[in-house]
Length: 402
Image (cartoon, rainbow, N blue to C red):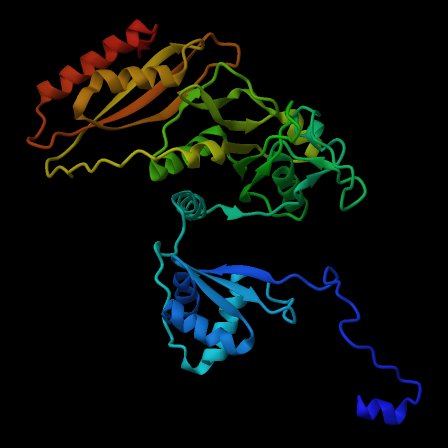
């Protein structure tokens, strides 16, 4: 005041309080701090009293309330609003160099989830079959679905990344067929490609459905090649699905395709691409295709593979050729042969199909059955008994032994 008198001659000093209002002053903030949380974050255990003593010189007032400390934050520290802010002050005043190097204890080790492991296994199996992974553009243009023989009903983007690329794909086939056509135009026939990606079929919900899908295309190959890929994949992954040729899938050959069903769910399609679709893409070769819904297959627990001992006794092969009506599928004949061969059957293969002409009402199907026992060498009587049962079972389906 004396200094002010020297510099300000008109200074008037009033006695008592000039302003008694306090509502404009900042309210003190109270934060609950858990000593256990302090130890968990800093890796060093502190008692409640030690924490109060460490923050007291910084203007923080701590009061013990059971297992927590109620800390009143000084008004000049508006940056402290959370429990971690108080813990930081404890560490700063205690000294970072004094904090021990404690490795946090994890309740669960890091690693891939079962679904992630199965997804990687799918890629490894398909790559092991000699199929290369492709990554086509994920968006489609007008006409792409129609060219692939698929429905034009699709979700469209209001703000596409590029003009024209505004259609969300409902199948992975259009992109892979473009890749096949590109390779053929550059004199690279016979490519085998696969893709794992997401499709977005239209839905009545606010958002479209989203499924993860695996698609495989084999150029210059027929439908059995795609079926073989599926069987290898199903065997490695422990999946089970039946082939149903009664339903014709869009964009596929009407007599060289099938759907894959597991229970009541359709999990995929397999077969050959329709010739009209190949013409639309300018592809001159046959293309076998496999497309399966990984969202359904990966979510289900795979069947545990059962170990089978290898027999030390020789096997015996039976070749059976039947004249079969066109209305009876080869799958039905194979299923009948499996049932009638019983436990002695270790392998069965369809190795020949013959038609006299395209309009014939029947065709010849030749199967090779491999029989083997684990405890003995099969006799001629054993083989003959299985052969007679298989022939009788096939005759019930309308087949005649050639």
